[in-house]
Image (cartoon, rainbow over all chains, first blue to last red; front, side):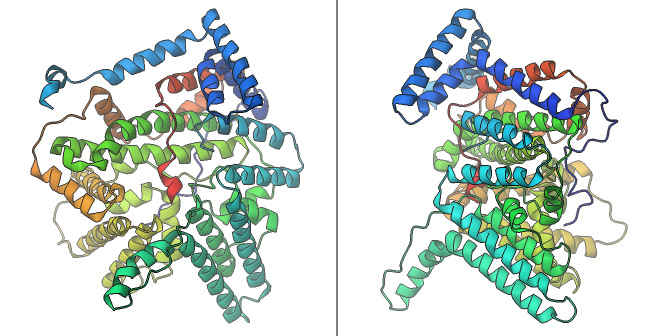
Length: 107
Length: 471
């Protein structure tokens, strides 16, 4: 029960440092861009999350804003990729092996 | 507050912004992290934040007292304080985790002896992550007693035990590893940040897609009523659970390591492709490494380790694994799971000693196959609600009958993917991170956003708690 590198961290990479750019700024911009991207393309999840929160006047107002934002992204077409991917995933979930699909009454 | 939720995402964005805005003010940074950790824990149940703080005070105070005594001249005092600390920690853990179990088990015995009394079941709520933070505090105090670490400040110890990335499901980060990091303003590099983002996205995929899909559509229904399914379904669901628990738990560890790294701290790895192990001993070097090394350093070695001959070593292995089993919870099935691992570990060790010279070694792939199936057998006990349930599950597989109704192409693909990821070169992730760190931040942001969008479109509705939250 012993291991030589059990306390090594996987985030310590053995490579030459990248000279350009401050790492924190790089990570912060990455996170900001990813967040904005998801805000524009994944409004359906944001709206669903707000709907799940405890009902109240603030929640109702935020839900209304999220709802109109969702409608805007749908009108712009930025919600389409997520909807298409989700549809594909649902189709993959529904696929059965041939023998099973042919004889559901035998189960 | 679960990692793969928008609630946690927003919480983390606020914490990330505030923490890095403290600049070089390391003490303020730690105070912010501590408050954030208490908010994170309090989101589940505020009452137990006091337990967390109390536990930190206990271990900090005892370690300070131990440190005051001279290791040479006052060794008995130091040892007494350490023993008091271990008893106090185990009492807290025992009360919350095992009190109702022991009372429940004691009741029939007491009744059989003619004392027909209702014993007081307290219906105790188990504080999330109590096993993890208790072990962390206890190991710090023991390390101070052993002279391996210096007694640390109250702020550092409280943060060590409360730090939200590892708080509820590990990895168990030792004081010797994290306290030195707390003492300095963190330094990061692009590779560390790229790897952190990669680990978070990879963990999100393993949890939200593989583990959730397998749990809801395969494992949960089959384990709920094994008698309703044929042997192929039972076998497939057992494999499915092996993949689910790996993807669930390693996902939490990956995300914890990634989140901590984004805040500037390095956690040790917790998993290393465990199902490619060719022996159970190797499995435990790859599975939940922070717990197995904890059990080795603070229990197995404490019991004498391998210093007293083969039978003594086997006894210590059995005790360690049985206690490791019961650490997971107050259930006989966990004890049997630990016992099974203990027996096989002992058998492997005995075989290594008695194997006649010149006998050929098993090919590695056969070792992997056998080890994996022993681990799966253990998982059946681990996952089943009761001992009888586990036995009927295994009997169902052995009966080899019935039709397969639960195996779908998607389920099969996910199980294969979950096993296949154990046989990929381990350098893939670091190599990818080394490449990603050279990408401009906006492009990296788009890549991360697209990956999360893809995962979110595949995720099961709602997020189930991580399996290890209950421990």
